[in-house]
Image 1 (spheres, rainbow, N blue to C red):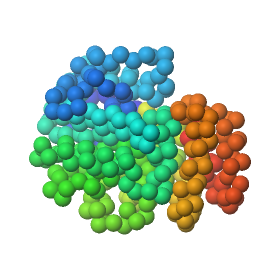
Image 2 (tube, rainbow, N blue to C red):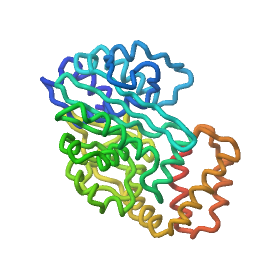
Image 3 (cartoon, one colour):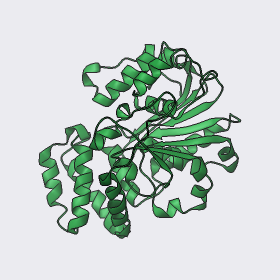
Image 4 (cartoon, helix red, strand yellow):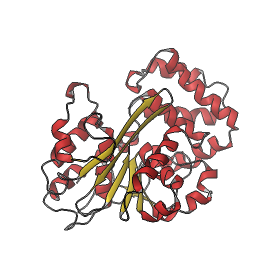
Amino acid sequence: MNIINYIEKHKNEDFKTFKFTEVDNLILALIPYLNLTNIIPSHKKKITLNTMVEKLNLNKKNLDFFIGNTYKMVNIMKNTKRYGNILLYNYHNIKSPEMQFGALTMKLDDKSIYIAFAGTDTSIIGWKENFKMIYHYPNLSQKYAGTYLNKTIRFFNKNIYVGGHSKGGNLAITAAMQTKNLNKLKIKAIYNNDGPGLLKEQVESSAYKKIENKIKMFVPEESIIGMILYHTNNYTVVKAKSFNILEHNAFNWLCTNNEFLKAKQTKRSKQLENKLTKKLEKLPIPKRVKLIEDLFSLFETNNIKDVREVHLKEIFILIKSFHKIDKETQNLLLELILTIFIK
């Protein structure tokens, strides 16, 4: 079953009766993908998930497949004993020329807290910020995530979960790295659901080592996003019903009654992890910077602000711009770009 089936199966069980699971983590991590501006307060005032869904006013015609499924998911959640009365608050949704950031805090009926960071939306700004991770830490979203966690976590004493899907998983880790030592003790687990990793220097840092044993990383069989850069070696591979980049879509992940259905990572995913990450790390910083600036200047020049506006013509122009990079790196980058922009 997938997460929708899981919600329906456990709809009459609260978190006191049926304890928080890794599957619940993924479900809650998806909620901040929705635009909840003017629905959820940005500070201490709370509303229930049921109330939030009632206030949602989405134009279903303009929804992509993933957001459409997320909308469907919360509509099912709103009338359940397990999720309907979850308290939502401290919602942030920020977009600037340099940053795309989202976060949401949720209080469950067992008094535990789940702090969710949003993944990348379809904006070019969001994807450019992601690609900058190959040469810069912390970026603006990572800094903001640390500030958000510090301000949020201080009100609570224990049983705090921090998590996210895609970029949100990376932000969950980097926020925990930056938070105060006392706050680190309050965090029960840090969930990275197929989010990109960190630079080698950061994975080897004392800040990372202090939280490493709390990181729970999940990736699908053909993980691409989760294999970018360095990450914990102790990750769980989840069975998915799709293929390639489509496995990044959390609605394709499969689960059992209380956990994800385990699988083996594909050869292609392992090769991406071993080749692309290490190859990029060998590139001098100035070359990495130029690579990303050249890549996204194409979209800026053509006034493309959303990945859904990217077409084959732009990709072909992009391919030609890579002629100064060695063939192996060029092929690896092209494979990554094509899987992301042409789904």
